[in-house]
Length: 381
Image (cartoon, rainbow, N blue to C red; front, top):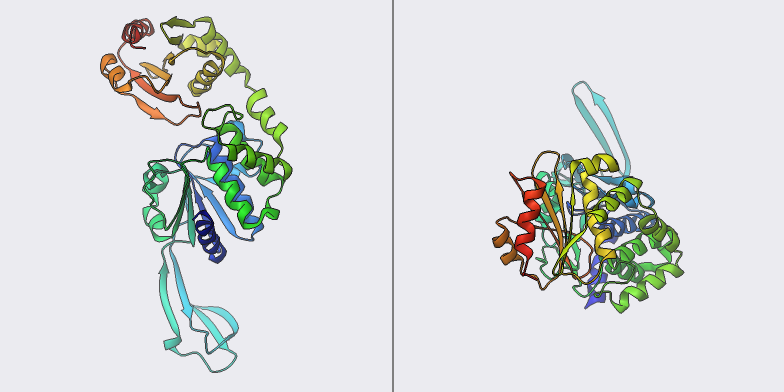
């Protein structure tokens, strides 16, 4: 079945002159690196390709080739298409000449002259012959990219590549492997099946980046045997593992390290819950930004064991307290939300079986938010 889907994808890509790679509004190292790998592969196939997303690429991936090629907008499909039947009258010469307010286009056949019946006119609704959508359970996951370009996206056939159980199978072709640990694992399977010789060092490094980041260097419980196999193959093809590890794990911005240090200094525990507090003064002293909060949570998650919740309560510049937490699957989030009196939103993260949620606690100080949080989690886990 998989080989049949692969062949359908190869057939679509082979016929296309221009391919759009569409990414969700939330960009992760896995989906971003996978898109870059496909982008470079399509270029080697002599295809014109674009990558687009409404989101911002992870800064940590700056070392990957072509990261700056990711666009936030699409070309509009507003071309007039002139189609000429050349089955019986092969084209010999095409030319054009402006004449006043008109443009004359001259078509010369090698045999009989062209007649009006040989010519058709149409509107090109989309400049893309095929759209490859990565890591999206539905088209709505594309966010503003879909909202602003719905007609363009609907007009072209779509190849849907994902590993989520809840995928809506919205594509003309759907490559959905819920057993795959990452999008990069699926992509490396696909590209190797087409022509492994086209996978060069840059492509292998991109795909290796996706697999390593999504499996947390193969430490996550859901890491599949195939992930190890694909990673080893990518290494043989020139994937630069040390470059990936250095840029993603051994190089951390100084402001992030300072903010992490301040979070560690205030680390508290109750039952199986670890949490810390960060004020605007902490951000100022660390020269950090609110965007550094998720990486700090990640550092806490990676360095603390024996917990079911790891949380950060942080003051926001615009007011209110942001609550960001990594939660074990055994925690009843519906009950937790009701007890705390707030609504949680799941956000994409790569923390194994743990899920990440965020909420805003308004109209209270950091001390008040801590008191309410500690009282709520006490006895829950």
